[in-house]
Image (cartoon, rainbow, N blue to C red; front, side, top):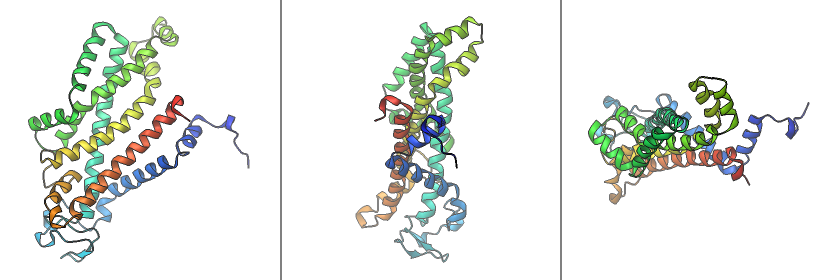
Length: 297
């Protein structure tokens, strides 16, 4: 069997080998994959649909781990204060968290990339105006902006995604603008402009591919940030309604029971949120090291 020497290894193969060379990052990646698989398969592996009020009964409220529900199944990690099976609620909550994080991140990324490329390529007053707007938004805490937007838009997954898009786009715009403005002054871009290529092609076929590495790193960080921010808003009672048990809602429901010894209602959803955010951050940190040779040891 022919072996591939390091010189013959493809760029993708080198990327994979460099990424999985870090055991901590490998653990974070496998943990993230497990969380995603559990969230996707939630309707088929959970004993209860926490959104269906017909399956939720107050008689099962605040049951400790290992208790048997009235429906006959075992509550592996107990139930919350309104009778929802915590295992089912956590997996369905992960679906909401991942949906909010990924959807808001993708939309904010598209918007931020477009604005950042425009600012770097056009320059002049357009660049100054866009960057002053970016600086103005980044001068305020993202949680404060999200709170104001949710107070105006109201509760709901769609409104939270819209609020998080408005919060996140500036990070992508600044990152892309900083990378693209360096590429804008290089010879291959000037040569493409001299050949009369359309501006759109220069932006998206020549400049944008060289900005992919920092975009990926920012995307992972902002996804984890969006998941945590959604949980914060739901915990404060202005994110998702009680009928949609996200991780923040589950933690909020259990906070009033902590002093009475019913720790599992808040602890287990909190651990699930922590593991999700940590796994995404571990993957993002390793991507930053692999995609930036100057950070490699």
